Structures are given as structure tokens and as C-alpha cells.
Length: 294
Image: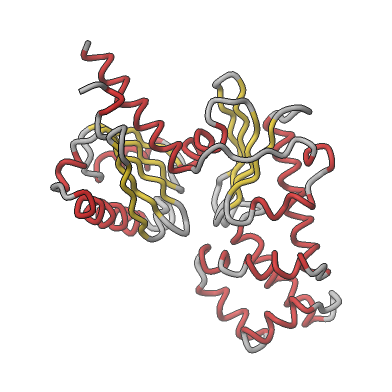
């Protein structure tokens, strides 16, 4: 069998969902599982991957061992260095795999092989430049120390500013009134925040974008602050005029109207999804193994 028709498996896991796909070059199968962040909850990430593989095998009508034997690329949020990468290698069932964080697959999927920059803002966030095949990355350090402009950041920031309206430090808006109503007051917001996971904060982001579209002052303040963070980060990774700018993730494209004018000029559509990038990287691994054996 040619390397480009070898069965490959791709795992694209983030703070909200984990998608697992298999491809034999002609067909693709895919299942969706829950949150898979290797740093936030390692055991949950393993559970979601293994459960997803079982569902994928059932969909394909093959034993799950066939997927374990496939060439696999595993891209997960929370893979912050060699230690956690090695732990995943030991715990995952694949015989041949590459393990990385989820940024590499996202960049490959969004840009393909073209030059450009990516501002990815899903539950978490990161920034990247691809130039001549070389990738420069920034961000992706998680909800406590980073993830600016992410969905969880926007949701958390909305609650923070809502509490400022309770103090009288900020003029209330329809968004802050809505949040106080939904959470039954400031005490409800504080109680929610004490137990909330990043994905829980992220579920509030659609409210922020909805109210920003209505020109709500607090929502627009949040979106402008997030867009400023994106602009700063993309300049840092090496954006220059004429280089494609792709905003991805659930909340990412919503920042476009708030982005710096020069960056808006180069806004471009993503070529594919992060999962497509993960499949391409799994295919690269299959080709490398085939070359080594020839």
C-alpha cells in the first residue's frame, strides 16, 4: 500500500471538544468527544481519546486495534513541554505517533502551505506565523497565565466588568444587566466563578459577541481589548503588510471589526480546519516511516 493510502489517525483536542478522525486517503471518518486538555485534566483527556477511538472503530466497522496500529498525530491543548509529551506517549495506545500541542495542527489546517499569520481564539488562544514552511508560535499558556482574547477570557472579563458595575466603578449596560439577571446577582457570579472551568467561562462568549453587535458599551470594550491583544501578538510573531491574517476559533472571527486597520486589510479565509491539519501531519508521519523503510 502506498504511504498516501496508509490508514492514519488524527486527534485534535482542545478545552471544549476533542475530534478524532481516521483516513485511508480515499475516505475519512470522524467522531467528536469532550474536553481534552492534557494539563487541565490528563486522565479526562485520555478517557475522551480512548472513548472516541472506540466510537470511531465502531463507525468504521473495524477492531479498535486497527486504529492503534495506524500512524497517528495527536495534537492536544496543554502539551506544554517534553515531560507531558512523554507522559502522553506512554499512556496512549498508538504504535506510531507524533505528539504535539494543538497549535501545530491548527496552523497547518488554517494556512496549508501558504505564508501568513494566525490568531486562534477558541476556548484558549495562541498566535502563529508561517513563513517559508517555518512556524513561529506565541501564546497558548492557558487560562491562568495567558489565553488573551480567548472565549474563556472574554467570558471571564465580562463577569469581572459586571461586578465593577455593582460597585459603581463602571456604568451598567444591557450586557451587565443580563449577566446579573442570569446569575441572580453578584453572589451568583462569584459562586459560579469559584467552580467554573475554562469551558464554562467560554460558554458566555456568545453573549459578549451578541451584545457587541448591538453596540453594547461593555461588550465592545471587551472585544476591543481582545482585538488589541491579537494585533499586538500578531505583530510580535512577525506579521508584515501583505501577509495573510487568519482569525480562527469560535470567537476569533468576531474580533475582525475591532482589529487594527492595517491588519484588517490582510484578513483572509482559512484554507481548512485544524482537524484537516492534524490529518495532514499524520500523513507526513506515514510518509516519513515509509521513506525510512525504503
